[in-house]
Image (cartoon, rainbow, N blue to C red; front, side, top):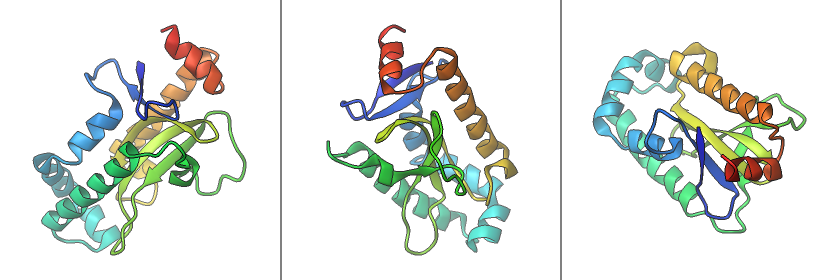
Length: 181
């Protein structure tokens, strides 16, 4: 795996997995703007959409996703140098009360009509610095309920373990690791 510097100043990074030509952030925004992919996804997960969001129309879900993805992408890619990423990313576990080594975090869009189901998952390298490991459309209460969100949990843990196994515990260690690999 490789790591791409997204914002150019080392505060936001994204994993580029060996099997992919682009980093995970680019891949997600491409996926979330692909109407055919979204139609397949929401058709396959229609029961969750109806049960948890009271949305019966796949077309409405697609429309909301396209809008949310565009807003989230703008928010991520148009970061000002003084933007506070700690306000965007929150602990993955809503009950976490203390900081962890390479803590697992999430970012999600904001909606007025219903909560956004788009999620970006990241490891917190240090205050204000994040490594995006993946993302998903989360239609259930927990990530363990569906295979695609469970896979994101597993990928996050895989990246975290890879970094720890290579002595990375903070931003300085991460930058050294990136420069020498």
